[in-house]
Image (cartoon, rainbow, N blue to C red):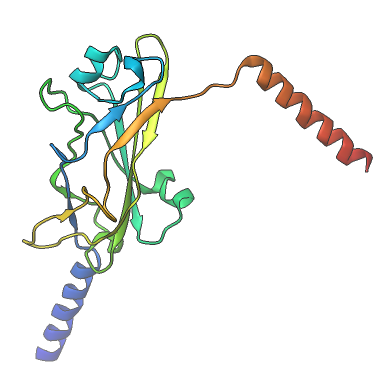
Length: 202
């Protein structure tokens, strides 16, 4: 009976460890400014998303107008897999404050999904994507550097820092999304059709 109790306690401890909820420090006030840049606006100089962006002529990239998505997976995961819907951890807007321009506050601590990937037993990697549409209909997007070797904290430990220099994530810039001209799309389609016809002939 005593042995069975000990074994069940051990099993419970292992199970808890396998599915513990890890935390990260995903608050970046004053550390990682989210910026927007366009050669045709503000003399081509990048400015922080938020009030600074609005004042510089980027109407639509102001407080609470930029959508930020966070992707996370085990360290060493390829970018193609990391940015798949299965690894989308959270979506928020940039700070709605008119004072804290350039920030996107997921939180500190930010609780990751309950999974063996995020239980603090091994490092993970994280990337952020940002997108917004200005009032003139022009779309801007960008992505952060890849943060690697981040080990989530568990228990009462301080949440793992993910913003900063080196292998961590630094600032990133939203730039215009280039949409092909209709003529380019047509020419591309004709080229593809010609290649297909050539392959069939062979």
